[in-house]
Amino acid sequence: MVGPLTSLLTEFNREVHIAVAAYDPAAVEREKGILGVVRVVLSPDKPEGEFAIMVRSDQAGLGLGHRLMEEMLGWARERGLTQVRAEIMMENKRMLRLARAFGGVVQPQSQDFRTVQVAINLNP
Image 1: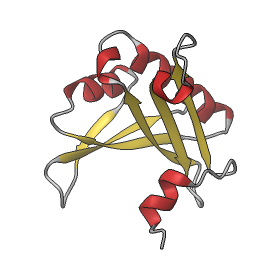
Image 2: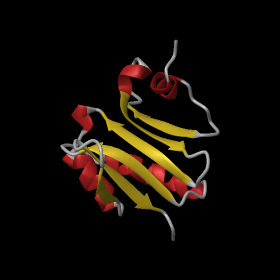
Image 3: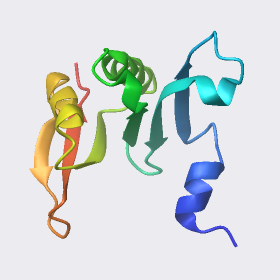
Image 4: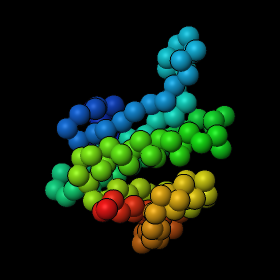
């Protein structure tokens, strides 16, 4: 049986999901050449989305996360979204800095003290 989280990770619906992977074109096996991924899941009832970015550990600090964030925010604006948000682990200082660099506002989560909610407003 496929649960909600499993289906979110394995089933891609182009109407509500936007994703791209950065990969090393010299990699023999494309899956092993993935350097990073960004994804947005669109809200069904608001012009908003939830995003996630993953950068392979050996690529951290090289600007790939910044580029993926730029790409994702471009899609979000093209789709008419007014806000994107993410839940970020408090110890993920790089991701928190990245979100803040793009105007992200950090708010503590009420139930889980290990994560914070970050919202980036996209209004011009």
